[in-house]
Image 1 (cartoon, rainbow, N blue to C red):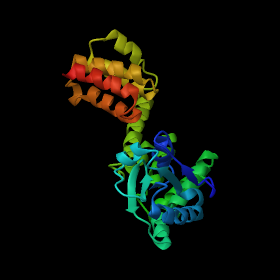
Image 2: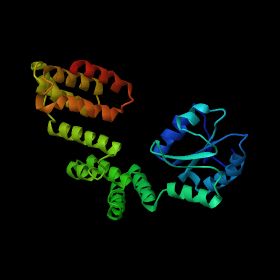
Image 3: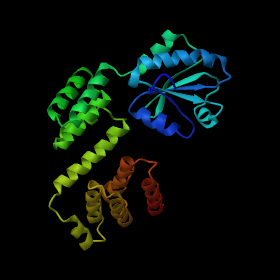
Image 4: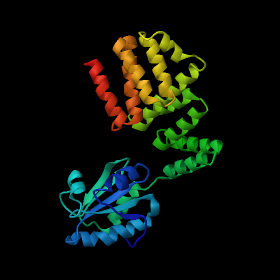
Length: 282
């Protein structure tokens, strides 16, 4: 492309990395087009010009539907030019046809970071540079104006967890009840608290001494999970389920499901242990 690195050509093979994954940090606008399409030739220069105005805040991806029919089919492109905006791996806005430049610009403006978004990015940079105090002030300033800002909630919650302020971190995460990242962070906070609470206890020896005790196997499994040893953790938790699936209202099963959330439902380890859990339960 001649306009610059903010505009990328994507294919069926690169769509997942260049659009879906990239959109988890930066909005991506995909222009589905074809060389024979007259309206595409009208929209093309307009959308590229507008994209250049937004620099790296909004990425423009161009996809030739003739050469890449799989992506066009997957995202139900029925007429071109079709323009679809992705955030956090999903479509959040779209239009079809060659819109005037002013409307295309409005489309990009709806995607561009807000002042609060930019402040959160600044706080994340401060945190990466080791200035926790300044990062915390910035996160709190954002939340004072926008109490449920997703980036500020997650950023401040992580910062608080690092200094063991678990109660406040968990209180913040309740502001994002349907958010997957918040859900995963809640699981991680639970495991961190558990590890801190049982520091110094030999839960491995307890499980070895009482192999038929679902509580002992559960406790050791949680501690393994807290240290990131997920396979070994799920082996212990599965054994707890085998011994007594109803112990503490299915606590071991729920812990395995929480690990699935942390790993991601598409992870190979998750799929492996989903099958194992089904075999134990059914």
